[in-house]
Image (cartoon, rainbow, N blue to C red):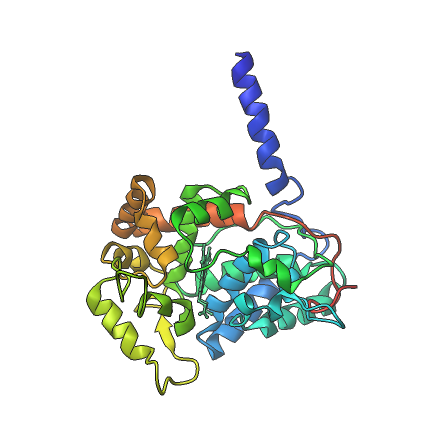
Length: 315
Ligand code: HEM
Protein backbone atom coordinates (compact mmCIF):
# COMPACT_ATOMS: atom_id res chain seq x y z
CA UNK A 1 0.00 0.00 0.00
CA UNK A 2 2.73 2.43 1.05
CA UNK A 3 4.61 1.60 -2.14
CA UNK A 4 1.48 2.22 -4.27
CA UNK A 5 0.92 5.62 -2.65
CA UNK A 6 4.57 6.52 -3.06
CA UNK A 7 4.46 5.56 -6.75
CA UNK A 8 1.29 7.60 -7.22
CA UNK A 9 2.88 10.65 -5.60
CA UNK A 10 6.00 10.27 -7.71
CA UNK A 11 3.89 10.07 -10.87
CA UNK A 12 1.97 13.21 -9.84
CA UNK A 13 5.20 15.03 -9.19
CA UNK A 14 6.64 14.06 -12.55
CA UNK A 15 3.46 14.98 -14.38
CA UNK A 16 2.66 18.26 -12.68
CA UNK A 17 5.15 20.52 -14.51
CA UNK A 18 3.47 19.52 -17.74
CA UNK A 19 -0.04 20.57 -16.99
CA UNK A 20 -0.59 22.31 -13.67
CA UNK A 21 -0.93 25.86 -14.98
CA UNK A 22 -3.09 25.16 -18.02
CA UNK A 23 -6.84 24.83 -18.32
CA UNK A 24 -9.39 24.22 -21.04
CA UNK A 25 -11.55 27.25 -20.19
CA UNK A 26 -8.69 29.67 -19.55
CA UNK A 27 -10.04 32.41 -21.85
CA UNK A 28 -13.73 31.76 -21.19
CA UNK A 29 -14.21 35.09 -19.40
CA UNK A 30 -11.32 37.16 -20.76
CA UNK A 31 -11.45 36.30 -24.46
CA UNK A 32 -14.24 33.87 -25.25
CA UNK A 33 -13.80 34.22 -29.03
CA UNK A 34 -10.06 33.54 -29.00
CA UNK A 35 -10.30 30.07 -30.51
CA UNK A 36 -12.73 31.17 -33.22
CA UNK A 37 -10.49 34.07 -34.21
CA UNK A 38 -7.38 31.87 -34.40
CA UNK A 39 -9.16 29.12 -36.34
CA UNK A 40 -10.45 31.70 -38.84
CA UNK A 41 -6.98 33.13 -39.36
CA UNK A 42 -5.42 29.69 -39.91
CA UNK A 43 -8.18 28.67 -42.29
CA UNK A 44 -7.77 31.83 -44.31
CA UNK A 45 -3.99 31.40 -44.60
CA UNK A 46 -4.17 27.68 -45.40
CA UNK A 47 -6.76 28.42 -48.09
CA UNK A 48 -4.22 30.64 -49.82
CA UNK A 49 -1.07 28.60 -49.18
CA UNK A 50 -1.12 24.81 -48.96
CA UNK A 51 2.16 24.69 -47.05
CA UNK A 52 0.79 26.53 -44.02
CA UNK A 53 -0.58 23.59 -41.96
CA UNK A 54 2.72 21.66 -42.04
CA UNK A 55 4.63 24.81 -41.18
CA UNK A 56 2.49 25.57 -38.13
CA UNK A 57 2.68 22.03 -36.79
CA UNK A 58 6.47 21.94 -37.06
CA UNK A 59 6.78 25.44 -35.59
CA UNK A 60 4.83 24.33 -32.53
CA UNK A 61 7.05 21.27 -32.08
CA UNK A 62 10.21 23.38 -32.34
CA UNK A 63 8.75 25.87 -29.88
CA UNK A 64 7.91 23.23 -27.28
CA UNK A 65 11.29 21.50 -27.45
CA UNK A 66 13.22 24.61 -26.41
CA UNK A 67 12.32 26.19 -23.05
CA UNK A 68 8.84 24.64 -23.30
CA UNK A 69 5.96 25.92 -25.42
CA UNK A 70 6.65 29.59 -24.68
CA UNK A 71 6.62 31.18 -28.12
CA UNK A 72 10.41 31.55 -28.00
CA UNK A 73 10.59 30.36 -31.60
CA UNK A 74 8.54 33.39 -32.66
CA UNK A 75 10.93 36.03 -31.30
CA UNK A 76 13.09 38.00 -33.72
CA UNK A 77 16.84 38.42 -33.31
CA UNK A 78 17.69 41.71 -31.64
CA UNK A 79 21.01 43.49 -31.31
CA UNK A 80 23.69 40.94 -30.47
CA UNK A 81 21.16 38.25 -29.67
CA UNK A 82 20.57 35.78 -32.47
CA UNK A 83 17.16 34.18 -31.92
CA UNK A 84 16.10 30.54 -32.33
CA UNK A 85 14.36 31.25 -35.62
CA UNK A 86 17.64 32.41 -37.18
CA UNK A 87 19.54 29.21 -36.36
CA UNK A 88 20.07 26.54 -39.06
CA UNK A 89 17.63 23.93 -37.67
CA UNK A 90 14.88 26.55 -37.94
CA UNK A 91 15.99 27.97 -41.28
CA UNK A 92 13.10 26.35 -43.12
CA UNK A 93 10.39 27.26 -40.60
CA UNK A 94 7.88 29.54 -42.27
CA UNK A 95 4.37 31.01 -42.03
CA UNK A 96 5.22 33.13 -38.98
CA UNK A 97 2.88 35.71 -40.47
CA UNK A 98 -0.11 33.51 -39.60
CA UNK A 99 0.65 33.86 -35.88
CA UNK A 100 1.17 37.62 -36.35
CA UNK A 101 -2.19 37.93 -38.10
CA UNK A 102 -3.98 36.02 -35.35
CA UNK A 103 -2.25 38.08 -32.67
CA UNK A 104 -3.22 41.33 -34.38
CA UNK A 105 -6.85 40.28 -34.53
CA UNK A 106 -6.79 39.16 -30.89
CA UNK A 107 -5.15 42.38 -29.71
CA UNK A 108 -8.05 44.30 -31.21
CA UNK A 109 -10.59 42.01 -29.63
CA UNK A 110 -9.11 41.44 -26.15
CA UNK A 111 -5.78 43.28 -25.77
CA UNK A 112 -2.96 41.81 -23.72
CA UNK A 113 -4.77 38.58 -22.91
CA UNK A 114 -3.90 35.72 -25.28
CA UNK A 115 -0.29 34.56 -25.27
CA UNK A 116 1.62 33.89 -28.48
CA UNK A 117 2.47 30.43 -27.18
CA UNK A 118 -1.25 29.65 -26.86
CA UNK A 119 -1.91 31.05 -30.32
CA UNK A 120 0.71 28.71 -31.76
CA UNK A 121 -0.59 25.67 -29.87
CA UNK A 122 -4.14 26.38 -31.09
CA UNK A 123 -2.99 27.17 -34.63
CA UNK A 124 -1.14 23.83 -34.81
CA UNK A 125 -4.32 22.02 -33.75
CA UNK A 126 -6.41 23.96 -36.27
CA UNK A 127 -3.85 23.22 -38.98
CA UNK A 128 -4.05 19.47 -38.34
CA UNK A 129 -7.85 19.57 -38.41
CA UNK A 130 -7.85 21.47 -41.72
CA UNK A 131 -5.86 18.74 -43.45
CA UNK A 132 -8.08 15.92 -42.23
CA UNK A 133 -6.38 15.07 -38.95
CA UNK A 134 -7.89 14.61 -35.50
CA UNK A 135 -9.08 17.41 -33.29
CA UNK A 136 -8.36 17.82 -29.59
CA UNK A 137 -9.07 20.29 -26.81
CA UNK A 138 -6.02 22.46 -26.22
CA UNK A 139 -5.36 23.33 -22.56
CA UNK A 140 -4.50 27.05 -22.46
CA UNK A 141 -2.76 29.57 -20.25
CA UNK A 142 0.80 29.27 -21.54
CA UNK A 143 2.97 32.29 -20.95
CA UNK A 144 5.42 33.73 -23.46
CA UNK A 145 9.12 33.50 -22.78
CA UNK A 146 11.57 36.39 -22.80
CA UNK A 147 14.57 34.43 -24.07
CA UNK A 148 15.32 33.02 -27.50
CA UNK A 149 18.87 31.92 -28.29
CA UNK A 150 19.99 30.44 -31.58
CA UNK A 151 22.55 28.29 -29.73
CA UNK A 152 19.78 26.45 -27.87
CA UNK A 153 18.45 24.97 -31.12
CA UNK A 154 21.29 22.47 -30.73
CA UNK A 155 18.85 20.80 -28.30
CA UNK A 156 16.48 19.90 -31.14
CA UNK A 157 16.61 16.31 -32.39
CA UNK A 158 18.30 15.97 -35.77
CA UNK A 159 17.27 13.76 -38.71
CA UNK A 160 20.34 11.59 -38.24
CA UNK A 161 19.42 10.65 -34.64
CA UNK A 162 19.19 6.98 -33.77
CA UNK A 163 16.47 5.57 -31.55
CA UNK A 164 18.31 5.99 -28.28
CA UNK A 165 19.08 9.64 -29.06
CA UNK A 166 15.43 10.20 -29.95
CA UNK A 167 14.32 8.45 -26.79
CA UNK A 168 16.61 10.62 -24.68
CA UNK A 169 15.49 13.83 -26.37
CA UNK A 170 11.85 12.99 -25.72
CA UNK A 171 12.26 11.63 -22.20
CA UNK A 172 14.11 14.79 -21.13
CA UNK A 173 10.84 16.56 -21.88
CA UNK A 174 8.61 14.08 -20.12
CA UNK A 175 7.61 12.33 -23.34
CA UNK A 176 7.62 8.56 -23.74
CA UNK A 177 8.56 6.21 -26.56
CA UNK A 178 4.83 5.93 -27.34
CA UNK A 179 4.67 9.71 -27.65
CA UNK A 180 7.72 9.63 -29.92
CA UNK A 181 6.17 7.16 -32.35
CA UNK A 182 2.82 8.95 -32.39
CA UNK A 183 4.25 12.46 -32.75
CA UNK A 184 6.62 11.50 -35.55
CA UNK A 185 3.43 10.82 -37.51
CA UNK A 186 3.47 14.60 -37.99
CA UNK A 187 5.83 13.70 -40.82
CA UNK A 188 2.77 12.80 -42.85
CA UNK A 189 2.71 16.52 -43.73
CA UNK A 190 5.01 18.87 -45.54
CA UNK A 191 8.28 18.98 -47.33
CA UNK A 192 11.95 18.33 -46.66
CA UNK A 193 15.01 19.85 -48.27
CA UNK A 194 17.69 17.52 -49.67
CA UNK A 195 20.12 18.65 -46.98
CA UNK A 196 18.03 16.88 -44.32
CA UNK A 197 18.43 13.39 -45.81
CA UNK A 198 21.18 13.45 -48.42
CA UNK A 199 23.76 11.89 -46.09
CA UNK A 200 21.79 8.67 -46.65
CA UNK A 201 22.04 8.84 -50.44
CA UNK A 202 25.78 9.05 -51.11
CA UNK A 203 28.94 8.10 -49.16
CA UNK A 204 26.73 6.90 -46.32
CA UNK A 205 29.54 5.08 -44.51
CA UNK A 206 32.72 3.14 -45.18
CA UNK A 207 30.85 0.05 -46.34
CA UNK A 208 27.72 1.46 -47.96
CA UNK A 209 27.21 4.23 -50.48
CA UNK A 210 23.46 4.28 -49.75
CA UNK A 211 21.95 3.75 -46.30
CA UNK A 212 21.11 0.02 -46.37
CA UNK A 213 17.94 0.60 -44.36
CA UNK A 214 16.56 2.58 -47.32
CA UNK A 215 14.60 0.89 -50.10
CA UNK A 216 16.88 1.01 -53.20
CA UNK A 217 14.20 2.38 -55.55
CA UNK A 218 13.29 5.02 -53.02
CA UNK A 219 16.96 5.98 -52.67
CA UNK A 220 17.29 6.19 -56.46
CA UNK A 221 14.30 8.49 -56.77
CA UNK A 222 15.61 10.74 -53.98
CA UNK A 223 19.01 10.86 -55.66
CA UNK A 224 17.39 12.10 -58.85
CA UNK A 225 15.49 14.77 -56.90
CA UNK A 226 18.71 15.82 -55.19
CA UNK A 227 21.40 15.78 -57.90
CA UNK A 228 24.91 16.77 -56.86
CA UNK A 229 25.31 19.05 -59.86
CA UNK A 230 22.72 21.51 -61.12
CA UNK A 231 20.50 21.06 -58.12
CA UNK A 232 17.51 23.39 -58.23
CA UNK A 233 17.34 25.88 -55.38
CA UNK A 234 15.08 24.50 -52.64
CA UNK A 235 15.26 20.95 -54.03
CA UNK A 236 13.78 18.27 -51.82
CA UNK A 237 10.99 15.78 -51.42
CA UNK A 238 7.50 15.69 -49.94
CA UNK A 239 7.44 14.06 -46.49
CA UNK A 240 5.07 11.46 -47.97
CA UNK A 241 3.19 11.26 -51.29
CA UNK A 242 0.01 12.58 -49.61
CA UNK A 243 1.84 15.39 -47.87
CA UNK A 244 -1.12 17.74 -47.60
CA UNK A 245 -3.33 15.14 -45.93
CA UNK A 246 -2.98 14.02 -42.34
CA UNK A 247 -3.08 10.25 -42.81
CA UNK A 248 -1.13 7.17 -41.68
CA UNK A 249 0.87 6.75 -44.91
CA UNK A 250 4.03 7.75 -43.03
CA UNK A 251 3.96 4.49 -41.03
CA UNK A 252 3.23 2.35 -44.10
CA UNK A 253 6.25 3.87 -45.81
CA UNK A 254 8.54 3.21 -42.87
CA UNK A 255 7.61 -0.47 -43.00
CA UNK A 256 8.70 -0.44 -46.67
CA UNK A 257 12.06 1.23 -45.96
CA UNK A 258 10.78 4.52 -47.35
CA UNK A 259 11.20 6.77 -44.33
CA UNK A 260 12.87 10.00 -45.39
CA UNK A 261 15.16 10.49 -42.40
CA UNK A 262 17.31 8.07 -40.42
CA UNK A 263 15.28 9.25 -37.42
CA UNK A 264 12.06 8.06 -39.10
CA UNK A 265 13.50 4.71 -40.15
CA UNK A 266 14.96 4.31 -36.64
CA UNK A 267 11.47 3.54 -35.33
CA UNK A 268 11.94 -0.01 -36.60
CA UNK A 269 15.06 -0.50 -34.47
CA UNK A 270 13.27 -1.82 -31.42
CA UNK A 271 10.36 -4.29 -31.12
CA UNK A 272 8.19 -1.90 -29.10
CA UNK A 273 8.45 1.06 -31.46
CA UNK A 274 8.26 -1.25 -34.48
CA UNK A 275 5.07 -2.72 -33.02
CA UNK A 276 3.55 0.76 -32.76
CA UNK A 277 4.58 1.62 -36.32
CA UNK A 278 2.87 -1.59 -37.49
CA UNK A 279 -0.23 -0.78 -35.46
CA UNK A 280 -0.49 2.80 -36.78
CA UNK A 281 0.18 1.61 -40.35
CA UNK A 282 -2.79 -0.69 -40.14
CA UNK A 283 -5.12 1.56 -38.16
CA UNK A 284 -5.62 5.20 -39.02
CA UNK A 285 -7.85 5.51 -35.98
CA UNK A 286 -5.24 4.14 -33.58
CA UNK A 287 -2.76 6.63 -35.01
CA UNK A 288 -4.93 9.73 -34.76
CA UNK A 289 -6.07 8.84 -31.22
CA UNK A 290 -2.48 8.41 -30.11
CA UNK A 291 -1.34 11.54 -31.92
CA UNK A 292 -3.99 13.69 -30.22
CA UNK A 293 -3.06 12.35 -26.77
CA UNK A 294 0.64 12.84 -27.31
CA UNK A 295 0.43 16.31 -28.78
CA UNK A 296 -1.59 17.48 -25.78
CA UNK A 297 1.29 16.23 -23.64
CA UNK A 298 3.92 17.90 -25.80
CA UNK A 299 2.06 21.15 -26.00
CA UNK A 300 1.60 21.26 -22.24
CA UNK A 301 5.31 21.69 -21.54
CA UNK A 302 5.17 25.24 -20.24
CA UNK A 303 7.92 27.76 -19.66
CA UNK A 304 7.12 31.45 -20.21
CA UNK A 305 6.56 34.51 -18.02
CA UNK A 306 4.43 37.12 -19.82
CA UNK A 307 1.78 37.72 -22.47
CA UNK A 308 3.56 39.45 -25.31
CA UNK A 309 1.92 42.33 -27.15
CA UNK A 310 3.80 41.48 -30.33
CA UNK A 311 4.80 37.86 -30.92
CA UNK A 312 8.15 38.89 -32.41
CA UNK A 313 9.40 41.01 -29.49
CA UNK A 314 9.40 40.73 -25.70
CA UNK A 315 7.33 43.32 -23.81
C1 HEM B 1 11.73 13.76 -33.29
C2 HEM B 1 12.49 14.03 -34.19
C3 HEM B 1 12.24 14.89 -35.38
C4 HEM B 1 13.18 15.19 -36.29
C5 HEM B 1 14.63 14.74 -36.26
C6 HEM B 1 12.57 16.00 -37.29
C7 HEM B 1 13.23 16.50 -38.39
C8 HEM B 1 12.63 17.18 -39.43
C9 HEM B 1 13.33 17.66 -40.59
C10 HEM B 1 14.81 17.52 -40.84
C11 HEM B 1 12.41 18.22 -41.41
C12 HEM B 1 12.66 18.82 -42.79
C13 HEM B 1 13.17 20.23 -42.69
C14 HEM B 1 13.59 20.76 -44.04
O1 HEM B 1 14.41 20.12 -44.69
O2 HEM B 1 13.09 21.82 -44.43
C15 HEM B 1 11.13 18.11 -40.76
C16 HEM B 1 9.95 18.56 -41.28
C17 HEM B 1 8.77 18.50 -40.61
N1 HEM B 1 8.56 18.03 -39.34
FE1 HEM B 1 9.88 17.08 -38.18
N2 HEM B 1 11.26 16.18 -36.99
C18 HEM B 1 11.00 15.52 -35.82
C19 HEM B 1 9.80 15.49 -35.16
C20 HEM B 1 8.66 16.13 -35.57
C21 HEM B 1 7.46 16.23 -34.80
C22 HEM B 1 7.29 15.66 -33.40
C23 HEM B 1 6.56 16.91 -35.55
C24 HEM B 1 5.15 17.30 -35.24
C25 HEM B 1 4.38 16.73 -34.39
C26 HEM B 1 7.21 17.23 -36.80
C27 HEM B 1 6.61 17.87 -37.85
C28 HEM B 1 7.24 18.18 -39.05
C29 HEM B 1 6.53 18.75 -40.18
C30 HEM B 1 5.05 19.02 -40.29
C31 HEM B 1 7.50 18.96 -41.17
C32 HEM B 1 7.29 19.59 -42.55
C33 HEM B 1 7.47 21.09 -42.42
C34 HEM B 1 7.12 21.90 -43.64
O3 HEM B 1 6.77 21.36 -44.67
O4 HEM B 1 7.21 23.13 -43.54
N3 HEM B 1 8.50 16.76 -36.76
N4 HEM B 1 11.31 17.47 -39.55
